Length: 125
Image (cartoon, rainbow, N blue to C red; front, side, top):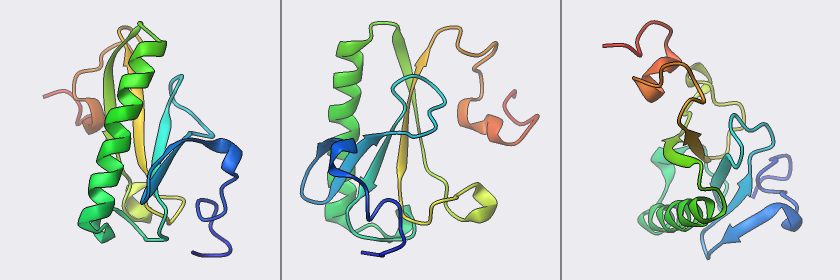
C-alpha cells in the first residue's frame, strides 16, 4: 500500500465489486457510460507485475462486471478491455488498473481497429 496512491486509498463507497485480490469502481473520467476500472488491491505498477492469483481475481471481476453491465443496459453490444503500462503508453496513475469500456453501435463513426486507434492513422488496415 502506498500512502499517496489514489487506488490504495480509494473510498469504500466507490467500490462496486470486489474479491480477495482486486476491486472494481466506475471510472472517474469515463469515456462511455458504465466505463469501469478493475484494480488489484496490492500496490503494483502494472499488469506485468500481477501474480497468478491477482490475474485470476481481476479476470473474475472483469467477467462478473461485464455480465452485470449487460443486464443493466441492453444498448451495449461490445467492450474494450485495456491497460496502459508506462508513461509513454498513457499511464497516469502508477498502480495497475484495467479499463472495461462498454461500447454501443454508433458511439464512434468507425470502430474498426478498436484499440489500434490509440496511434492516429493505425486503426484502419
